[in-house]
Length: 87
Image 1 (cartoon, rainbow, N blue to C red):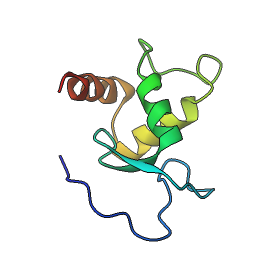
Image 2: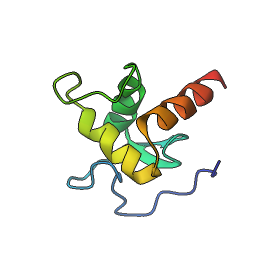
Image 3: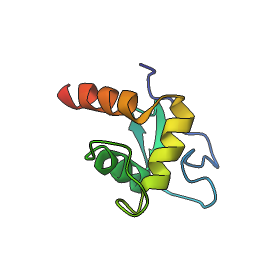
């Protein structure tokens, strides 16, 4: 697991870089800083037995971008999320 680094000036959340955010939190699953909105969307996005569609979860695109960032399947990310939730 990487350790949090200082956030550089002009940093943008890797899951929603098209706009500017002011508040970031370290996300152990993403292993980087994400904005508060994406942090909540990540936490809620693993409540589904399978990768949610946009019809099931209006933030499914955030989960898809997270999976791309990590290079893993939904099942693997969910497993990691559950492990991290235990600590």
